Every structure is written in C-alpha cells, then in structure tokens.
Length: 262
Image 1 (tube, rainbow, N blue to C red):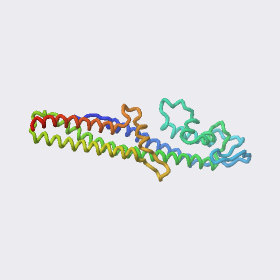
Image 2 (cartoon, helix red, strand yellow; image 1 turned 60 degrees about the horizontal axis):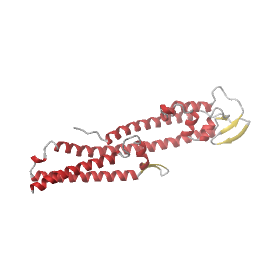
Image 3 (cartoon, rainbow, N blue to C red; image 1 turned 45 degrees about the vertical axis):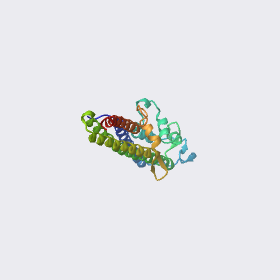
Image 4 (cartoon, rainbow, N blue to C red; image 1 turned 90 degrees about the horizontal axis):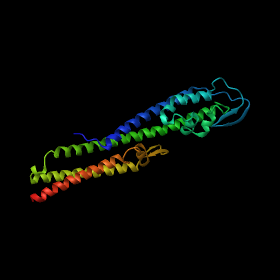
C-alpha cells in the first residue's frame, strides 16, 4: 500500500512551477521577438531630451497607435498573463511593466509620456527582456534540480516505507532470534539511508543555481518560497525525519523481543 507524503505534494507543486516557468520563458521570447521586429521611430527634430531608458522626448504627434503603445500591448498579450493571477488582475499595466522590467521603462512606454520609440529605447526594452529571460532560465534550472532531488528522495522513502509495511504484516512474536536480528540490522541500514538523505538535502539547500556567476538563486531562499503554503517548511527534511523516527520505534520494539529471547 502506497503512503502519500509531503514529498509527493512537493512533486506536484514543482511540476506546476516548472510548467509556469516554461510558459513564462516562451512568453518572454515571443515578446522579445516581436519588439525586435518593430522598427524604431526616427528621432524627431524637436527633441527635448534623450536617455537610453526613456527614448526621445518630443511634442511631435504620433500615429493612432504609436510604437510605444504597440510594445505595451505586446507585453500585455505575452508576458503579463504569465505573471499575474486572478488576485492581481486589477494591477495596472504600468505597474506590471515596472515590476517586471523597471520604473524607467514603464515611464518611457507610458501613454502619458510623450516618448518616441527610439533605437535607444528599443535596445533598452530588449536588453531588459533578455535579463529577465536569463533570470527565469536560472529559475527553470533550479526547479529541474529540485525535481531530480525529489525523485531521488521519494524513491528512498518509498522503498523504506514499503519494506516497513510488508514486514508489519508478520508479528514480531512469529519471528525467531535470527530473524529479529536481521530485521534490526535492516532497520539500522534504513536509518543510515535517512541520515544520508537528510545530509544531502542540507547540502542542496546550502547551494545555488547560477548563470555565469552573475545571476543566481539560493536554494535556501527558493525552497521555502515554493512551499510557503505547505503545512511544513521543508517537505523532504520533515518526511525523512518522520520516517527515521518510525524506523527507530520499530527498532525499539524489535530490541525488546530480542532481549526476551536472549
């Protein structure tokens, strides 16, 4: 009989997170590709100021839908659906762009700002999108590593749990001294496996997933964030600790029978 654990719940959560991350990566790529295809507007003669993030400020009138508006619409159609849930739908597009990219880009692209889609502004938008793509890709790789660790931990936990379940079908009173001794030794091996698994998990939590040494995600911060609404902060460590405790209780019962048979 299989027993559901916090690790199983964690696997389900990670699958959802990985799907969402892949969708966001695809959205960023589609956004970037469409912005790259959008030709910049020629710099108007009546330029009041130019910045890399804000483009060219001008009082020259634009077409019905200027290119900054096209960028905003493209963002709304691609990236925004992947980063807002139902509770955040009321957040303005300006606020979402600011949170995802930067305040200066949100201002530069805002319809209330008379900014042309200059080559500098186009480059700034593409550059910021590429940075976000790298950050999300680092997250994707961190989630993939977590999924692999969960599979490994789940296999160990399942193996030990199934062994305990099968052995519990035979009462200790039906075992002779040698059988009791072998069961006690096997439980020791299982506890060693639990200890090794807990140690490996701690090592994973102390590590990071990086991109070129510049962008990285600390697993110590990522794991509690992913499982923040779980009843436990660390699903793997909690499951392993409880399993080790179960093995210890089983050993105690076996030892009592061994003493009686000695």
